[in-house]
Length: 430
Image 1 (cartoon, helix red, strand yellow):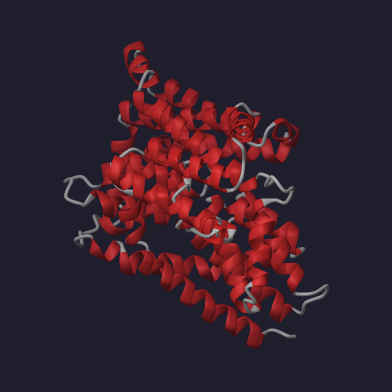
Image 2 (tube, one colour; image 1 turned 45 degrees about the vertical axis):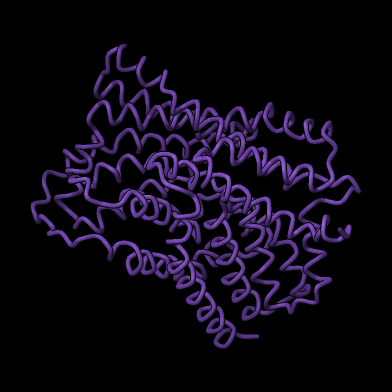
């Protein structure tokens, strides 16, 4: 057996490690086991010795980022569980049912939560969406796909997302211009979600009785407090986010929990049930494993190069045309990192270096539209995307089955982005 067969290009090794996660999860029905296998394959196949691999694992698990991210995840699980125990989730769904048809109700619930760039925010919206299916008549797979898809429709342009801010920083484009360029793709994503996901829901009637707006505000107050405290800290106390980027979110979630307890006090028995939930521990472990996989993606290879740099070099060596590179590099970065900041940080410096020192508006903005969308779709189809993982865990569905149902809306968005980027290139000054 040849050495080249055992040690293919690094891109192939990464892709095969991702496929191993999908395959093992399908067989074992355990995300913890499948992520562990994926980590083992990636770590050893990229040449790390057992001791070096162990160092990477320990460094990621005991890092301050992991500690605070775990606090966010646990806090979100507790808050969503407490909202359910207090009856607020059912009341919120009932209130929205009076305003929206069932189709748009189920889209609105994850979309509203998506306005907050919360790690694993899909876990927060999943119980809401589940309550929105009042007759429990929908396939859990369809609920998984709707929750996951509409949770992320803002990430093209919403400036609260760190990935958007990083993209603005790297490209040197003002925030308002970036938002203006990317905003139309929000409509493409919403349209794709309606055509391929929401249209499969039996059409329900909208109740035109809108109810008392004053009764609606208390239902969203705990969630609103999370957003207000998080945003307020970023605006007025930015030094707190310098301690750790997840600290403002931790404080926001804690404020939401405190607000809920003041609104609808819960007994100690309810708190014990929520705090001791096995699901909390399971999801915290899953998120940590996903971060460990990301650590191997970000790590230096034994030869000294970074893995993503090696993959970029391989793509160049293959002689791939610039237009295809503009799609492939961010898409692969999105698949392998599973987060917006990951694909922006890994691909934007390379892509925009390829454009030269002073690209005209036509080339710059058309490239932004295509690059950001392809990276976004890579992130959506990443089996290590935390929102996908926690949504699958909540609805007890499989990663592979969930992703298969998103291929058509993904292709629709990609086609829309290609047409839109072409229009920008033709219409804007060169």
